[in-house]
Structures are given as C-alpha cells and as structure tokens.
Length: 219
Ligand SMILES: CCCCCCCCCC(=O)SCCNC(=O)CCNC(=O)[C@H](O)C(C)(C)COP(=O)(O)OP(=O)(O)OC[C@H]1O[C@@H](n2cnc3c(N)ncnc32)[C@H](O)[C@@H]1OP(=O)(O)O
Image (cartoon, rainbow, N blue to C red; front, side, top):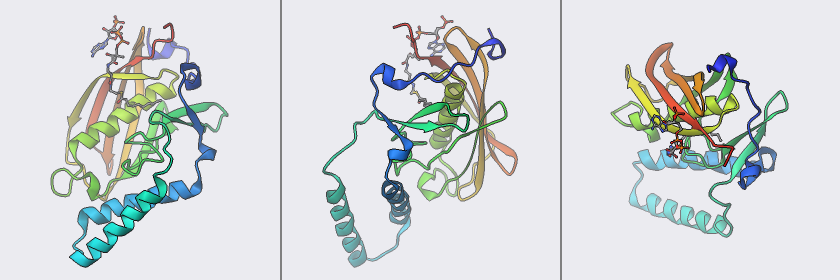
C-alpha cells in the first residue's frame, strides 16, 4: 500500500492512551512571553562579555526567578492540543525540544501544512552553533526528525522514528532564514516512509529520510 491509497485518518486523541493534554488556549500568555525572554537570556549568556559584577548580579536575578516559578511543575509527558483551520485537532509534546512552545530550549520549529506535507521557516541563533557560524549537525538532524515525524502525524499516522538518515549537502548558516519541508512518501503496514529537506536561499543544505513506525492501536 502506498500513501496514495492509505486513507488519511484523523490524528488519534492521546487522552485515549492516558496522556495528559493541555489545549493551547490554556497556556498563559505570560508563560509564552517568559519562554521568549528565557531564549533571549540563553543567547545573551552564551555570548556575553560582561564583567564579574554584572554576571554575579544577573546570576542572583536568575536564581530568584527560578525560585519564584518552581513551586509547581507540569507533568513531563503533557501534550498540547491545537485546532487546525479545518476544525480537527493536532497534538504535540508541550516541552518537545524542537517544537515545544513552553520549552525555552526549543528554537522553536513551527510547522504548518503546505502542499503535500509540512513546511516551516526558522532562523537559528548562536545557541545552535556547531562549526563557527554554522548550525550544529545534530540540531539539523533533530529538526529533520521533528519535521518528518510531524509529517507522518499530520497525515493521521503518528509514530516513533525507527530510522533516520541525514545527508549534509552544504553548510547551514546561523542567523539566516531556513526553510524546512517534509512529507510522507509511502506506507507499508505500520511503516511510514517520510522525506524532508532544509534549504537556505533555495539551496538544499541537508536532506533526510526516515522510517516512522505507527503507534500500534491494537494493543
Ligand atoms: C505527537 C506527534 C509528534 C510528532 C513529532 C515527533 C518527532 C520526534 C520523533 C522521535 O524523535 S521518536 C524518538 C526516537 N525513536 C525512538 O525512541 C524509537 C525507539 N524504538 C522503538 O520504540 C521501537 O523499536 C519501534 C516503535 C520503532 C518499533 O517497535 P515495534 O515493536 O512497535 O514494531 P515492530 O518491531 O513490530 O516493527 C514494525 C515494522 O517496522 C519495522 N522496523 C522496526 N524497526 C525498524 C528499524 N529500526 N529499521 C527498519 N525497520 C524497522 C519492522 O521490521 C516491521 O516491519 P514489517 O511490517 O515489514 O514486518
């Protein structure tokens, strides 16, 4: 069976698997604003040349902020529910390290439906650096993994990555707009074959293929 004759099912509701789900509109705007500020903080810390006095003062402020918000914690595996323009629901891990909206460690990659799959535009700062001035190859793989897994999920076939193959075709620059694309290319029983690319100025800098194995709904 190929993707062309595979009926596109609605994404299964994770609540049926006992997972905790938070609708996007219940995430306080103060939290998303804080996440953006912390991303800026991480970039500032990574690159600062401030003197000892300023560093010590900043450290005390960060410790106070950490203390202030550490009283209660959301459970680790919580999912976020978003409503697509067509009214159907889609789910993502709230603190996913690539796309999680409440995770300051995520860039974040925001994938949208486009053509036969998903597309995102993203600019990565020096926090994601590998070679000087370039994006770390592990992060490129992570971005492709997320896009490929997301494409399978968006086609109604969420699952786990069994195999990921990445080819780095040309250096991927920091501080420059990148385009990420991904789509399902075929299916076979629980196996979902996906492919995707990272481009800069229209040139492919990395391409990936993956085998996603759909969650087994029978068990
Ligand atoms: C909510 C939406 C979010 C979407 C975005 C998520 C993006 C992020 C994706 C990830 O990062 S996932 C995390 C990294 N991956 C893992 O941790 C997976 C670890 N491995 C496993 O859990 C299991 O090995 C796996 C679920 C992949 C498969 O185990 P199963 O017991 O469910 O499957 P099974 O062994 O019955 O294999 C099913 C089919 O897949 C094939 N298969 C399984 N692993 C394979 C492999 N590694 N290579 C090739 N084929 C493989 C297997 O041969 C068989 O093919 P056939 O149908 O032809 O018989």
